[in-house]
Length: 294
Ligand SMILES: C[S@@+](CC[C@H](N)C(=O)[O-])C[C@H]1O[C@@H](n2cnc3c(N)ncnc32)[C@H](O)[C@@H]1O
Image (cartoon, rainbow, N blue to C red; front, side, top):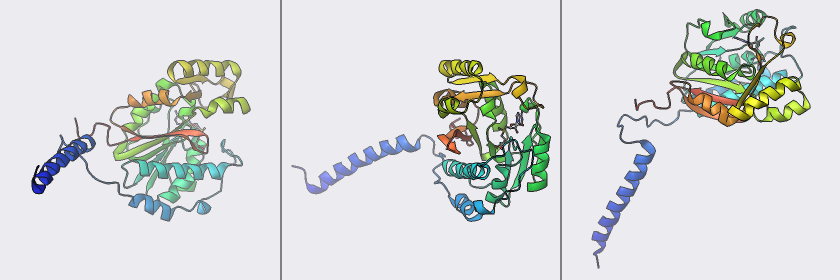
């Protein structure tokens, strides 16, 4: 029989070894510099204090293509999504925000209330939309190009909000633009981007996005690679777009495989139907997935 104190010592050594193993598994103790910080929620608390959807301007442009009964609710839903993205990421301060594509400020009007001390850049191919955002929300104008990787942003962003752009681009363009934009993030900056997800298959039956022939092309890509796309016919495109622009639909696994290929970011969040009970939302950003281990 072992003495009580001897037994206690054996137990202590056993427990220490178990907990060390668990610690190793969780915190990767091989790297003594590993980031052990705990999320600071003060940014989120400040946003909740500053943002009141009832104080958001409802003055719209007469040529806003997004005008409709749900206009203000859709903007408020984006604000909700961005708050969730802040909680999910390592972001602790917001000094500069890019709204791309800004359209006529359906979301920007909410962003300026969420982050009253930040600077805003409004970027779109639609010059009238950019001008509206400059005049109404004091944004810095950035005229986009059809090949967006040619745009000179000349800034780094804490948040890049991309509402309903990749819902219109092929997998190749989506990956190339996301990779390009990821280079314009601050140390803890995030991209919050929306996509047509699985629900689009049901919505096509109720209110078609595109004709049946093009839809079946989208579905071919959707089934084979997890990301389907077809161009609009030229009479359905914005007059100022001559290149590729249409409808995309992504499966969660198709999107994930695109996101895995974006250098120097980590995947913070994937939420189905998070925006306006419709678009899926992805949050990627810095630090990179292998930060501190390279
Ligand atoms: C569906 S609207 C969304 C607008 C805005 N995000 C909103 O939610 O109200 C798509 C926008 O993408 C813009 N767009 C298309 N191609 C673009 C490009 N290469 N660069 C910037 N904006 C582009 C269009 O001009 C249009 O304003």
